[in-house]
Amino acid sequence: MAATDHIGFIVAAYAAAAVVVGMLIAWVAVDYRAQRRNLADLELRGITRRSASARTEAALEQVKEQA
Image (cartoon, rainbow, N blue to C red):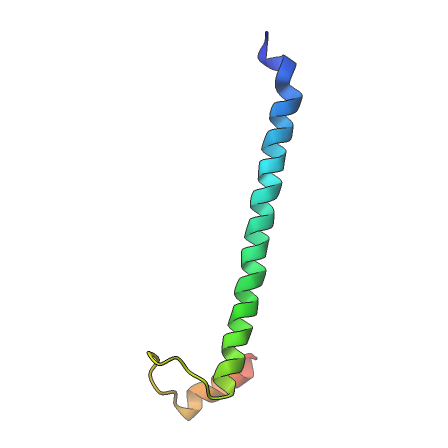
């Protein structure tokens, strides 16, 4: 039994793994952007995290420009 007998399966397995990893990376990137937009929207409405320091007017203007 030579390794070349199963080369199709090996290539397909690596291709499927690459596609799955690529999709996971894309999903994380899209979700990251969505979460950043949600956080920016909350900050624009004045809702902040309890652990965050108070924002200055200049910082709020900068957030508004980025959105």
